[in-house]
Every structure is written in C-alpha cells, then in structure tokens.
Image (cartoon, rainbow, N blue to C red; front, top):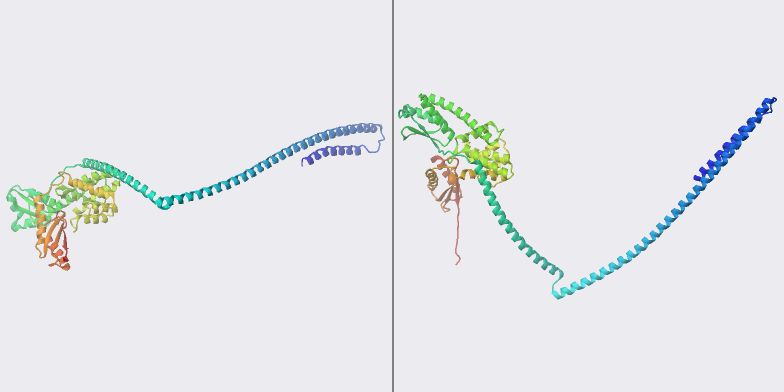
Length: 506
C-alpha cells in the first residue's frame, strides 16, 4: 500500500507537466501571422512556455527525488519492523520450549511423588496391621475407645459447667425476681377498705322502725321487693342492717332508705319512686367510676357498656378488698413487670383490668372466670386478653408470659399484708355447712370443702353407691346446697367412687 502511494506521488506531477506542455504546444502551433506584431507575440509566448516547461520538469524531478527518499525511508522502516517481529517470535519460541521442558519435569516429579505416596500408604498399612496384632484390637475398635474416653471426659466437664451455671443463674434469677416483685409492689401500694356483705343505716329514733315496717309490713315488703335485699330490724337499737351479696343492690338499698328517712314519707309508691331514682344515680356514679379507673390505668376506646360494668367494681368487695383499688393496684404491678420484662404492656393492662370482670356479672350463673371469658369474647377483645382472664387462677395452663404476669400481679395484690380482711368465723361456718350438707346423704364416707368453699369433693362407699347413683348423688347434693345455703359465686360438687379389691397368695 505504501509503495502504491509513492508511485502515485511520482507519476502525478509528471502527468501534470506533460499536460501543460501539450496545451502550450497546441496553442502556439497555429499558422504564422502575417503581421510583425503577431510574430513578436509568438516569440514571447514560446519563450514563456519553455520556461514553464523547464520549471515543471525541475519541480517534477524534485518531487520524484523526494518520493524516492520517502520510499527508501519506508522500506528501511519496514525492514526494521520485520526484524523486530522476527526477534520477538524467536523469543516466544524459546519461552515455549522452556515451558514445555518445565512441564515435562513437573510431570516427572508428580509421578515420583505419587510413587512415594503409594509407598508411604503401603508402609502405613503394614504398621497399622502390626499395631493391631500387638494391641489385639482393630483400628475401628481403637477409634471407638479413644472417642468414648474423650466423650466421657467432655461430658463430665460439661456437666460440671452446667451445674455451675445453673446454680449461678438460680441465685441471680431469684434475686432479680425478688427485686422485681418488691419494686412492683412499691409502685402500686394502695390503701384498702374492708367491707362485708352488710350495710348499716342509722335511725333517728325507734319510731322510724315502725314507719319503715308499715301497716302489716307492707312498707318493708315493698322495700325488700324493690331493692332485692334483706332487712334486719332487731339487731341493735337505733339502727338496722341491710344484707345482700350483691353490693350494688345493697348500696342502692342503703342510699334509698337514707333518702326515705330524710324525706319522711315512707309508703310503697314512694319507695318504688326513690329506688328507681337512686338506681339511675348509682348507675351514673358507676359509669364515672369506670371511666376514671380506665383513665388512671391508661386504657381507652372500650365500649360504654363494658366501662359501666367495670364501674360496678366501686361497690364490689372481695375478702374486704375493694375491687377498684385491687384492680388499680394489680394493673400497676403488672404494667411495671411487663415493662421490665419487655412484654406486651397493652395486653397486660387489659388482662389486669378485666381479670375479675366476671365477679360483677351477677345476672349470669357460673364461675367468675368463665363469666369473665364470656364477657371478653362478647366485646371481641384480643384472644391474649381472654387467655389472661381464663388463666389468672391457674384453671388452665399459662399460654403466654403476659398471662403469667397477670396471675402474679393478682396474687401479690391479694396476698400482701393488710390487703384482705375476712370474718374467719363465718368462713369456717360456710365450709362446715357445705360438708354437713353432703354428709347428710346415705353412702357418703368423707367430704372435703376446697378452694374457699368453691368446690366440694365427696367420697362414697363403692358397695353402697354404684356409678349411676354417683351421678344422681352429685346432682342431689348440689341442689340441697343451692336451696339451703347462701354463698358467693358457684360451688362445684365432685363425687368420687373407687373400688379396690385385693387377695393374698399363700
């Protein structure tokens, strides 16, 4: 390609000069002019054309010379490049030969190493056989013995470490748990107010008792029918006692009677009017009490009906402990423990707030735990909250740590010194009456009143009572207790019949 460029550069000026020469020769080859001026002009033009041709020839020669020099330089450069390429090719060939030589040596070395490894393996196998013959055990047996010894050593070490960690953890856990419970109780300590199942109303004079009784007892009958309480007028001079297990009805009756005494007009129509007005006032007071309790705890957006039911805690007492104070105290403890243990605080709040809601559901039959579960499901509360209510007396196993915290908070609030007050004489009498009611039936051998009178277990003679009679006996005992005795909540009757037969082989 470079040589073609050189030829083209040399030929082009020559062609140009020849073309010019041809043009000038054609122009000035016309017939001679007749006039003298034309001859002179012809001579001048001929001279100029020759000069131009000479210059063109000189320029062409110069260009040709430069082209030859350029071509010579290109040939020299190409020669040097070819020489360098040849040198590199020779160097590459030598390196390839060296690599092939090294590869051959490596293959030879690898073969030698393989032979050595085979020889070593053969030697090792021979040594193993000699050792097995000397020790009288195989390789697998020796491995098993070594691993067994090592495993036993490690087990002993791990067992010792585990015992140390367990002891340390127990000490730390016990200390931490005590600190947590004490701090929870310190955060939630409240005063208590002892209350029982009666209310006392003071009378201005003894004449007021006669007015309360009315002609032929119509006033007192209307009063007891409207309020659902029992009135004892002969206990102490200057006062009367209102008795009822339902604290709300008892409070309505007490307040209604005080209003009737203050008004002075005591008659059946007036009694019904005052009781109805007092009932509305008490319901309003309970709603405000429920709202205030929810606000103190930090629970919002509950249904108004549920808040009104919570407000009934204001007049409900359990073993002398007011339910509002108990609920507030328990919830504070539960929230503190849930916060420290990083649990779901909202679940614990609702669980502690509603754990005893079944105690104020007096219109339904059943234990307060089951009634509380039914109420929680009625208002579509979360299942974890329902579980807290169902498990706060360990009737069913705990399903979450939140349920356990609710149980602990409830137990601490009820068990702390001074929290609950109970008439032990009445308590023992209630248990004795329950046992006596069951013992009055034929075939009963032993009776045990359990769970503060919530359950009665009856053991019968298997010779006198069969399985069908045991079922009927449980029904009869429950019916007698229900008719003859007064008790809070429910009483479960369990009849146990067991037949044992033994013989002696001689």
